Length: 434
Ligand code: UGA
Image (cartoon, rainbow, N blue to C red; front, side, top):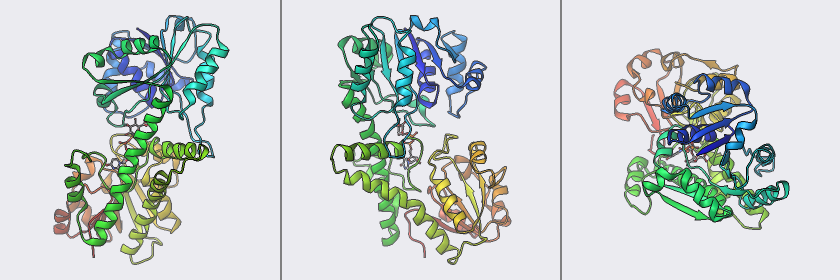
C-alpha cells in the first residue's frame, strides 16, 4: 500500500520506517530540509537503538523516501498519517495548529476515499472536529482515523514490532478495513485491534499515559515511605509487581517521570477535565507529586552535604530523561541541575549520548567527556539516568579522583555493598540512610 507520513519527528519517523519494513511503500514528509537531507543519506536525527538498520533495509528495498515538498507523487497515496507535534500551549491545552495546517496541505493531493490518520496525540473530541473540517474543505469522500501510538523512546523498534494492541478510532467501516490492511501482519499475529470511536481512541492514549505516570508517582511515594520506615523499595516493587493485577512494569522508583509525553499529556488531560467540569483530583495530585521529586532530591543532597550547596561539586551522570535515548525534554536530571545551581552548587555533567543536546541547552555547564572525568574533584555523584555504562564504571578509580566520596543513586542501579566496601557513602531512592 502507498502510505505517507507527514512529520518525521519521533513518532512519524519510527512508524514510517517500520511500516515500510512491513512491505508498504512509504513517503515521509518533513519541512526541515537538513533533516530530510540527512535521512536521505541514512543519517538519523534521533538516537533510537535498531532503527538505523531498518532505515537502511527499507532504502535498499526502495520502500522509503523522504522529501520536504508536497508534490504529485502524493496522488497515489491511500493513507496519509499525520504525526506532527501537538505541544502544550501556555494554558496547558494541546496546540492543534500543526495538525490543521497539515490537513490543509494534504487535501489537494488526497484522492476519493483516501484515509487520513491522526497519529499525533490529540485531545478527546479533536477527531470529530478534524472530520468536520475535512468535509467542509474537500468535495471528495475522505475518511478520518485516530490511531494513537504507544511506542517508548529507546525501545520503539521493539514496541512497534510487538504491540500490545492497536487502537483505531474510525469514522467509517471502510476506513477500518483499510487500516486492517495497513497493519495486516499484526492482524495475522492476532494482536488485538480495538475498533472504536475517534474520541474514545483519543482518550485511550491520554488515559494510558496518565495511568503509567500515576503508577510511577505512586511508587515514588512508596519510596518515600520506605525511607521513612526503613523498608526497601526494590523488594516492595518486586513483591507488588508479582501480583498480576498490578504488574511489574513502571514500578521503578526514581527522580520522577519526564520526557516529551507524560508531563505534556497529563497537563493536557487535566486541562480538558477542567474545561469539562470534571474534577481530576488524582491526576492533579500526580502532577504535583512528580513536580516535588526534584525539590525533595535537591533538599536531600543539601542535607547530605551539611546543609549548604555553595561551591559543592556535583557530578551529574545522565542528563537524558531515561536511558536508551538522547532526548532531554522534561528530563528530571535537568530540573535537578537547575535547582542545584540556584543554590550555587558547581555542576559537571556527563551522559553517554545526551551531551550534544544538553550542551546546546546549557552551554555554560561544565561538560565532561567521560564519567570518570566528570567525577574529578567532586563531592557527590548523582546517578540521574539508568545507563548501563554507569553500572559498569570502575568505582575504585573514581573514588581516588573525588574530594568527598558520596554517591546518590537516583535510579537504584548500583550496589550499596560493593560501593560501601570501596569506601563510598551510598544513598539511593527508597532505602533508609542514617
Ligand atoms: C511513553 C509511553 O510509555 C509510551 O507508551 C507512549 O507511546 C509515549 O510515552 C508517547 O506518548 O509517545 P516514553 O515517554 O518514551 O513513552 O518513556 P517511558 O518509558 O514511558 O518513560 C517515561 C518516564 O517515566 C521516564 O522519565 C522514565 O524514566 C520514567 N519511569 C518509567 C520511571 O520513573 N519509572 C518506571 O518504572 C518507568
